[in-house]
Image (cartoon, rainbow, N blue to C red):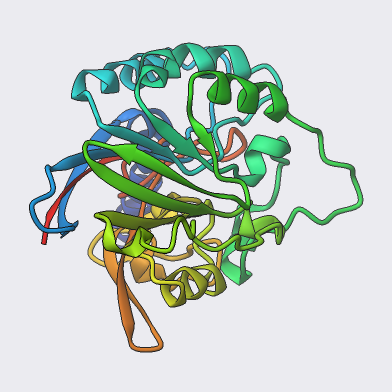
Length: 311
């Protein structure tokens, strides 16, 4: 009998040890390996006016730069080799008060290309340490008893602007590119309830007759924002914020989107529908993480290259 009990205890101990080892290995992979497995997701969309030349749009989001992230910086600089026609940055570039210089160094080659941008909450304010399980109960909040530490967003905006990138913070603007007029409308971060829709550029009385594409740009893809863009006639919507769920279950996907977007839309190219209209929606899983939750699992960091072609 003693031998049987000893064998059972040994088996239980081995099982517990194996489970603990697997858990440690998973955490180590998520914290030290996958979050640095940067990749490029490529998508194609036939949404341009007939006879338009293809347009290559590089969508960046949620860089969450902190000092001494050399692997991320090197990878970002290498994206310039794609030679995009346009860069769209959907915010949360920073995650540390001293991150501006390394961010601008990493983005320097891409600033040579035309671009547009909107901010996220972690462009304005440094993240705080939160219980990660709070995300399971709903979107995170910036409300709290402690004041938020402001990040150098004004200097970042100024550098983006001096490079020619268009600030779409609650603004609309048209950009001429490769014989096409791109009509942009962007909003300030909906996660902070700062979004104010400015409409799409009206142009002249005959503007609708010229070849054009209407693009809505936001950091956080809250449904109210997506509905507004759709009702206004957007042809494409670009957003980030979700981190693709950041920690996902293989075969299932994201557990959270950190907004009211359904979790199955937390990453990738889908079709958003509202009031009988359908618009392609690209949500980037993002490039970084909060410095207080530096893990990714079954959700690799990404930039997105969208090749737009004529209908």
